Image (cartoon, rainbow, N blue to C red):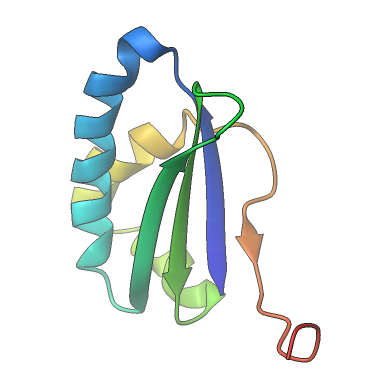
Length: 96
């Protein structure tokens, strides 16, 4: 399962945001069930940043948000995300 979280970050704030994003990802990588992550800018709108994380399953992702260190580091950053559904399940039969 994967999570796609988008942020709108003004260019003047992106350096600070990048530091906070790295800290959040570092904490989340330590959680059980974490598989991989990527981040990138939208090619048409440089203020739009996406964070994609892959987890073993939805339970792993949800449990990963509970530890104190995650609540202190990652959750405040994730709360700045664009308010939209973010968890997606794989469609193994959709794209073989």
